[in-house]
Image (cartoon, rainbow, N blue to C red; front, side, top):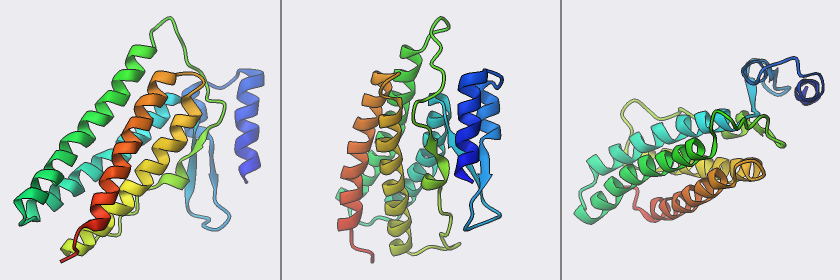
Length: 187
């Protein structure tokens, strides 16, 4: 089925009949392993930024929940800083994009689209999660976000190096936060 998506992207580049919005919405296919799951190919920088926002928002909320339940003031301060840092990093990536793209400069399609299915949010957190559940969910989402940022940076680098650099910085900081999460006691 992936060939159909590649054909769609190829047709767009050669025939110039589809807009970027049409590619984003129509470049969907069913995964052979899960017939009900729809995958989207993130073929533009703006679609990548939109997916980054979808990953970062729940991640920030999870860090906030961890901070609220933290008894150690030192760890509470670190987790609260992660909430602020996540927002700042997302804003930095978006600002780099806004500064690099003007009305006169159209970015177009990425040479290497990113498959959104590889970077989905897994919403398997219980209704009343334990501290261990929160740490595990936050770490899993942080890991997904770091992988996504690294992959997306490679994809946008040729067109928008400033945006790619902002993504790399955000991924490095996410890796640091992930190390902190993995060292936290689950009780």
